[in-house]
Amino acid sequence: MPRNELNLSPHSNLFLSPHPDDLVYSAFAAVTRYAGEADAIIFFNSSRFTKWGLLPKKIVTATRTLEEKLILSRLGLKSSFVWLNDSSCKREQVESREIQSHIPRDSWRIGKVFCPLGIAGHPDHVALRDAAVEYWLKAGRRFHLFFYEDLPYAERIDNVDTELRRIIITLSKSSATLSVCYWPLNTKLFERKLFFSTLYVTQNDQRVLLKRHGRVLGRICGSPFAERYVYAEGVKDVPIA
Ligand SMILES: [Zn+2]
Image (cartoon, rainbow, N blue to C red; front, side, top):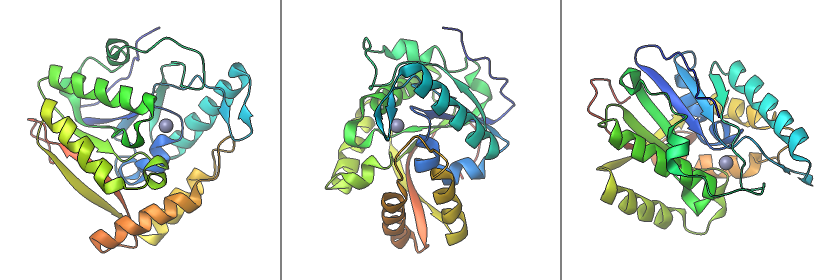
């Protein structure tokens, strides 16, 4: 598998996504904030999963990858794909080292990295999160590491706050002091997020779940809607916000 040849600019930001669609569902506020200043890597884009059930891998992978490429490009993100099999395909367990080998080596250029929090335990999300944490530690914590809350899973589980605390405690043991932050979205921006979520025509319509979750988080920070992130501060002299 070839390495990603991303040409990172100084203080570039990096979005790590398990599947096509995760960044729009879960980190839309950050994506729009860093449009034009960030790159995205999508790891498990080889897939059979569609809203019509499992279909032939070649067709589904090509369609989902194209969907994601066009959508992220419209949002101002340059994307690259790793083509690992997602959990809907037969596969060996993916090693953390393998995932990390596709993250650009020049981490000194990176300001912020966004990766999934792994809420609800989707194996692809957890594998990417753990690899990102390992990579961050090996890189001497040189960038700020943000974990985005996995949607729509976070809205589907019974007690998301308990699960969030459990994950934070687990991650704190190995990596750092973690903080929770809420990223407000006004109604116009949230409507835009919902619109972009509908562009994934091969996937289920998640607007109801996204809206319910965004509204609950918005109440916490006094905004119509919000997204929730957990972050670990790096040693780099780059502002967190
Ligand atoms: Zn996903």
